[in-house]
Amino acid sequence: MRSFPLITAHTGCMGHSAHSLESLCAALKLGADVYEDDIRLTRDGVPVLAHDDEVLLSSGRHGSLAEMTLEELKHASVSPILELAYVLTWIRTTGKTMNLDMKTDDALEPTYDLVRRMEMEDRVFLSGCGYERAALAQRMGSDIRKLLNVDIESFRTLSYEEAVQHACVEAKVAGCFGINVPYQAVQPKMFKNAKRYNLDVYVWTVAESEDMKRLAQWGVNSITTRDPAALIAVREEMNQAEEIMEWRPS
Image (spheres, one colour):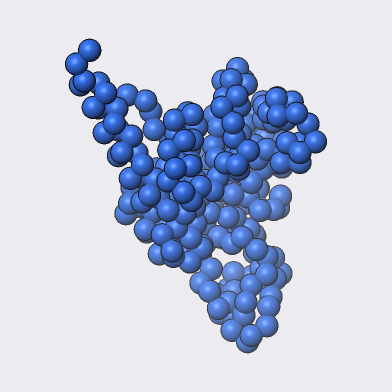
């Protein structure tokens, strides 16, 4: 039976707020393999879950996450700010994996220190890394895996084959285990090059079941979605179809 891609739940899954405990719990309850969330750094050096630097404050004004301490954010932010350390304790308890989408270079070292301190090197990997950030992460150590976010501009300026080749070469040079690709840029001929370089292909962020099915049939290694329930349903449908084919008399 064909191996189905890893099911990666994007933060904000199943209609819950992004970067929330409710989103994490929904993903874990459904049985997603991987949980993805964005990582930024507070002024006092604490890795937290956040996509943007701008935060809405209870005063009605906006503040900068990078210019506020964790304690200040806890008291002033309208939305709860979750520490990465807290979320990783949930990940470790459930035996799942977390995709840390790194939003800034300065968050790399504190995140590395935290992951190593918690001895969770085998439970996380990094994404959000263009070539420069991936190379910087590699210099900090190869014990934490990472994906290369492909350079989308290269797919506009080069031929498709050249863009894929460029991404694969950069991924290998930066010590990445795979490439992270917006699903719209994926074509079947991408996989030949990825296989040649021994690279996984991870895709984001897929909403429609038909796209999920097509990408799974092509052989991607992971599909990121805000609707992991739909992706699980696609997996069950495809598994049932394969079982019927296996039992069909020749």
